[in-house]
Length: 581
Image 1 (cartoon, rainbow, N blue to C red):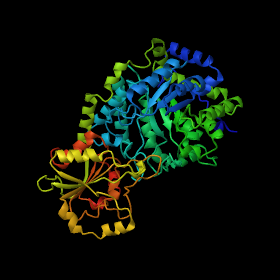
Image 2: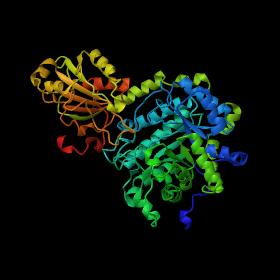
Image 3: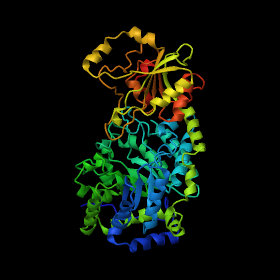
Image 4: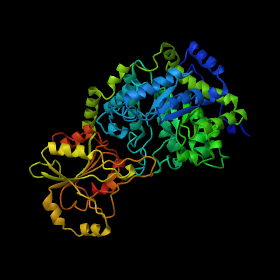
């Protein structure tokens, strides 16, 4: 076996970036590891997804599973804070507490502030929106005890059909991604102030090149090594130079680099279990000294690669220091314990992983905060979650980022000449066909502006005969009964289909824009930016990015001409249809 095929036990320097530990902190790391039993060491490798909040479950996480970190499911702020406090007070070693702070504080607490997606913030005239999104997300997350941001997302939206990161990426240009990720990171640091928060760039080696979703299949970054170096390689070099504390590895293959780094390779694997990518490329070539963790290990892009008894040790041996989420905690812990006891994962490799895990905790001062009893803020700190100041920021970001992609001259609408509006909200089939939650808010805003609003269709056909009756109805009748149509869609999609496109209730469904040549038809997306591909016939298309009250208010004001469209868009939003604009 050549040296290059040995499991990664590359050494770590805890005094260097991104840890910057002093002598006493390094000593805490070393003595804590030395005092641990093997089950305690194994538990530190895992980040649990807290979907349950009952005390018995939480106590088992700490007492039996001994996890190194948690990422809670969104819940009311008081409940999240209580969960974090219970596990932190019970844990021997303080826990990393993560949140997906990709759009503000909404993924931390259910009443948190959704400021805007990465794409939305990058649609603003400058970097301020991205910085403020990070600020709000950091402040609201820290207020309930979080200390680890699973962001910034530094993927690049190269393929307009890729919808898993279409809204989550800052754009389709590496320089744009670098600038906005840096602004976001500065905002996080400003927002948390006295409570340090680690950042985690994701998803190495880079999503957005193919159109598939790693939640369902191992996706493939098909770039050549030179293309990758000038794109994702440059992005991650910048993140590392900026002291990013951790990097999340995706279940994404990078075949050209795998073959270059290890010519003898006989199977291309996702980066999470590919040592040539996690170790040779990220650790060696890019010089990353921080913590590496896997993306969620119940995603099929990971689980379908190998049997789980091989997968988990393979991820650690490839260079991953932490494993994101159990599939079954008892089974997963047993797999890792057996791997260490049999030497599949060496004691040296385990020790290096633990140094990075505890080194990250020490860099945040968690060991000192544990002694001081300040790991979780007091209850009054939660006043910042969803506060008026943060809602005002969200409103300002909405005003800056609502983007007019296409207009044939129909805007602005005049209430006097277009008073009668048919509001059409196709059901989001990825949300199990539930009526859109934003429909009522959109109707209320339009009515407040003076429009007469009718939801259309009043009822969906129940049989094919009713569909044919609808198809045979008079176009002129539609035009006589309304002055304009506004179609509002809030499609999002992760983990159910790879490339999400606009979907209607049924073939030839009555809400489909068959009427676009009869009355002015305005299409508003409160979600994905790729709908121009499916509705190029509309009179105007607006990408508004998010279904928040602030965004919906801004949309109506801009439709009326009371506020100018200030957002911009990248070329991927055009879906290759430049000839129609």
